[in-house]
Length: 174
Image (cartoon, rainbow, N blue to C red):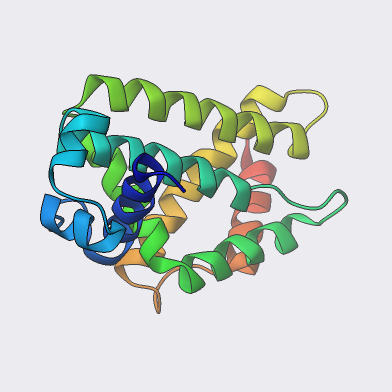
């Protein structure tokens, strides 16, 4: 890898291990093996580097949303719930990126693009008749369930509860 890629890799590791607010430029250079001045040379600022790293992490998370063809909704949700536990630091970094996007318009736009892709992936998997709506609702559910698992994993709903809840909502819809 080149120095730019090393910096991105180091920033992603720092985001996962330390979080956005607790990562310094020196942390990134220590994790990447690059020198401090290379951040400015390749990215202009630490914030620009961190934002780029968050975009890459968000793109990687979309891969967790890809489910084998024919998988049931319960299997799909079980995979997500397992991922929230197994890759807790990654999901925490993604959640932090959403809050950072409020302050960084470019990051906000790029995360919005990643969200569009996530909804598209989910919608195509869930519905042939209304993929846009199915993807939007599933994405909203994932964000909410992820938040519950990050805050209180022992109290958060499992896959079967989520699917039961969806069926209850669908059955009660007017």
